[in-house]
Length: 181
Image (tube, rainbow, N blue to C red; front, side):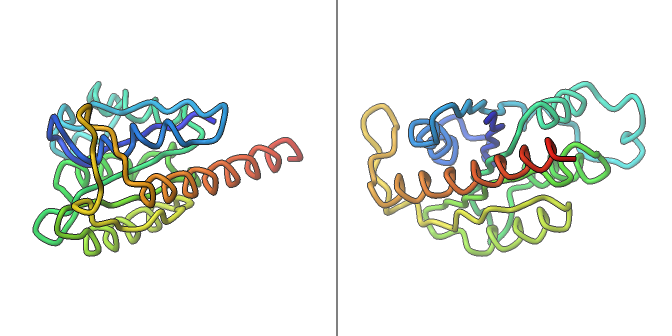
């Protein structure tokens, strides 16, 4: 299973990127997790620019999504909402065919809680016809990091393992269905 992991924060030391890196260690065997690092390079969404050829960073994002079996998104919450850079990326995908039906694991983490952003992301992803595996909103301040920035909180690691196992099940079912078609 190839998973494109999208951290919803532009911060260099993003705890959401740390969550996704931790997920790589607990994902099912054979999982390839690719961390997307182009969020900050996407132009501001405009329907006027969403025509062929789309801007190169947008084309690259869409190609990476097309090549992936699934997505994993980990997002913080800013002012009770989705970070603007992540919403911008999702706006670029609304008219694209690549994300339709794509399984996506959603985990939201923020020091003060991430329930508002998590609910908004669930709504947006479902509206985009994606198969959402809800990994839950977590309060990251309860997580522990080691000196290298890796997550060491057993409950959070277990939740990630469970979420990725559910994601793998959905991907496997989809592959079986496609073989039978």
